[in-house]
Image 1 (tube, rainbow, N blue to C red):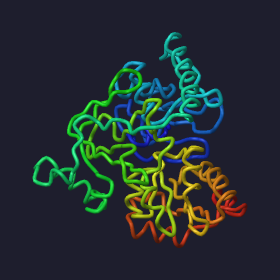
Image 2 (cartoon, one colour; image 1 turned 45 degrees about the vertical axis):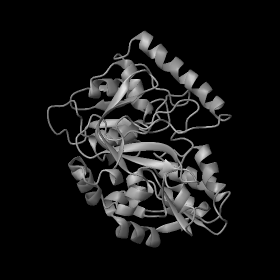
Image 3 (cartoon, rainbow, N blue to C red; image 1 turned 180 degrees about the vertical axis):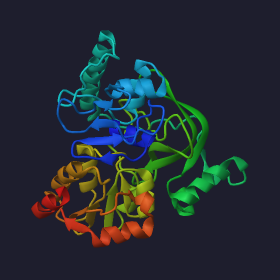
Image 4 (cartoon, one colour; image 1 turned 30 degrees about the vertical axis):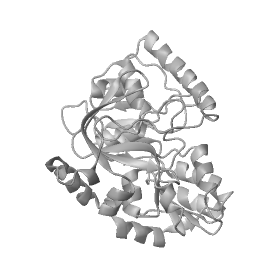
Length: 351
């Protein structure tokens, strides 16, 4: 979603009731979180404005201005974050978009919705790996992997993670987007998702330093797996007595063999069905999304709990995600701050 792009590029926001507040990248200096992003589910959702320099707009105009790209390139970048405006949360036109661009945006969304319906009857295949992808385990004597190994060590990932998820890297790669443009990846780790037979299904990335884009989910064609219908590490976590549902791959890796990642806050019906159809009745599901996703957690908990009573919310008292807290602290939070996702838990998570 658009707020994921904002957080990846601008850092953790200050959280208010209906807004996320960031330092504005278009001001000359630190703005003390004067850029406001509206996140309430109404006609203003996705609109942003800076109360210092006056910059304002919608997700497409932000992406165009921030990355210095064209309209179509901005739509492509937003697509890697699974952002598509819909009739409930569509983004009103602002002055930075021409009438033609605005019309293309709405038409593109309509076509995408039709494609998603068609996808349900497709036998999916894995999207192509990014050009130049190399597995770390195959390049242990190659000096170019040293920065990637340092990053892995710093983030707390293990050598077993490298093997289990075929973690690889790209030095400089262009990833084609559905728009016909490309996103450039410079020094990105590449994490693979596998099916229950251990075969590659999907990929996503994380930059190890400054980069044009910090994280990319594989763009997918109609007949390819996407972030909407796979779950990272499900093939291994399902063997455990409990699983922990997180947003991103780094968080899942921090949790360990029980960690799952859904590639963002919004968990799709396909992902829920995939999870529930492979869970045993006695297995526990812990929902551990970021602290700014209370409504999303409540909605997800309701859907899971109605079909699987061993579902729990992790009421995280820290304003940190799992990867920032580390393995031991994350499990301490899970053990000491979890409540069942029943009616009482729904109330508790919203307080």
